[in-house]
Image (cartoon, rainbow, N blue to C red; front, side, top):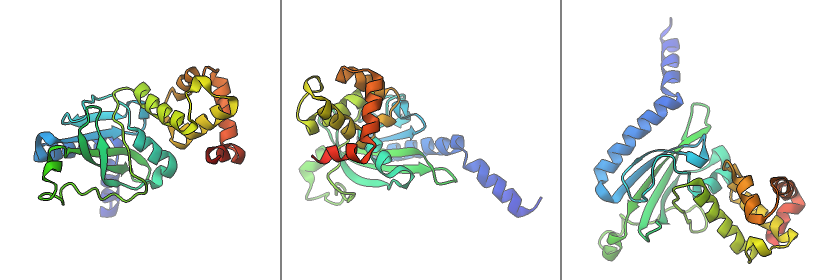
Length: 234
């Protein structure tokens, strides 16, 4: 067997998802231990967005393995797919009001497909009082567009609830009082945020809207047409 064939086989073995995630877990531990109790590092397997968290070192966001991916990552994956860019140094806020400097690196397999994410959350709440002295440390440098808001949730229903609340704010009223056109706009907003990438989202959103899941699918068909997407901008 030629040396090139051996190297090719070795590279293939090193690029299996199992090996990639094993290495990410080791990296997560190293980073978390290096930066201490203010740092948390999460490893996500994006093959199942509703329970993507497979390992977490640290306890800043109080999540456990089996928690879903955040709403921000869902939105980025929906909009950019496998071309999603890493996000470095953006601001996040925990449920208990802690201010975090967060970074997300998307992990790809040998074909360039995104299969996971390595997310670092550093609690800078106390450092804000010393901002002048440690300005470089808490510089929020990510320039990917509008200010990023990320919500950390423990269950997939909490993630969908966050997206539902955001969509309701866009429409301007709660789902129970929406007209059919407003419900379509509501579904369009959820589609734009990537909500329907989450397993079980259609059934849950049907319950929120008080309609059948088939009606939600019908709204989605309209949304995915040019006319449906235009509703967002009315």
